[in-house]
Length: 513
Image 1 (spheres, helix red, strand yellow):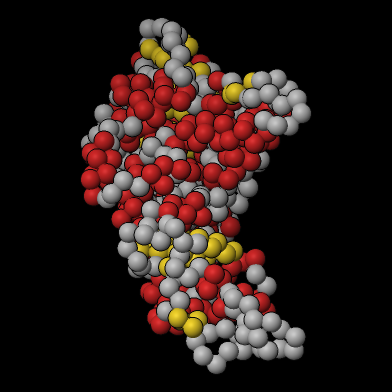
Image 2 (cartoon, one colour):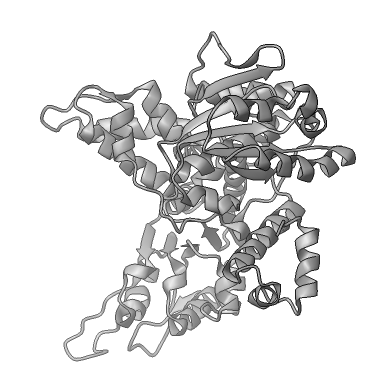
């Protein structure tokens, strides 16, 4: 059973737990009744699916794991999914939190009505602490504990924690980064409109503030809805050009036949009855031209754009002489431009001319701690915009609604979050947006949604060997399923030369067939 297949099937009761050392000893001690916490819970309660998070820093424990999983699967009808996690150690609070949060998000992304249970007994004390925090805040869940003497029981945790405080409790102090950002660049209050407290966004803003002062092109990459135009405006406002025009252009919205005239202008007499008209480049003279969805530009127009960047001059359609301009280019795309260059859809020379400063806006799902802030600020915006509408009352979120929003993966990013809050405000009859209001306002996550393997941020959360292993296991299992277990056919499906080579890969990545 693959991890992907879990999220395609209807899910009812889900147990999520770290595998502990005492669990690994279950097969050996089962004759004495000491099954280990996870097996004990599966024997005492009914679950449809079990998600096991695995981290062992000792080789002998790792060797016991495959046998334990096989033993556990033989004892239950529940589907078991393994998630191998990389931590700095069993007390790595940040890594434990990120791993646990990802597991919960991936279950709830496709099955919002799943009932979660977290097992506190297996693993280290920090792992149990994180389950308590998550289960009492953004992922409401039953907390259970087990022992040989008292069996399996619900853990009574006599306190609740406000969901919006969770990121502060688990986020590592990052004041040094903020201080460095302030020291290295002059104060730029324009960036305060970009609401954040995550480290990945703090680094991005630090770089954007430095770039703002330089008269160089900027290329912003990011998924739709991440706020590329907002960042471009902040760069413009923090630059020496802030008193000059900021001209935004959606390249994808211009018909192909009009792109050149819209960008570069038209000379009088270029066609019968045509009057002279300046293009966007001339309109942005002295200021900043923001070219959104740059990847939509036709290749012939890319050639002319390259000349503008090289020569600082534009030639109107129908004109013989170029005109000097001084416009800074900030371009943005929701594609990975390197991939577009490789596919022949984007000129390599233009890419290198634009990519003097490349800023990658992370998706909202990678901005740990930012969602709560954004929910508050965007709800204020929704209330302000609707204040003059008949009968409208300012809305606030219930604790359940907030928890639901914090747990959502937000494939549409900040734009989706804003529109969801607007819908929730409409559905809400009173002053409080309830959990049901928020649930009805959420759009279903597209089934084709996948994690962007090539766009993950570099840093402490990226583990290349684990990432490669996950990809290999995914395709090996798919190939075997499609080939009906025929190894020769499966080898051909994944480009391996023979079934012997496939067998080696299956052994290397521990794919059981």
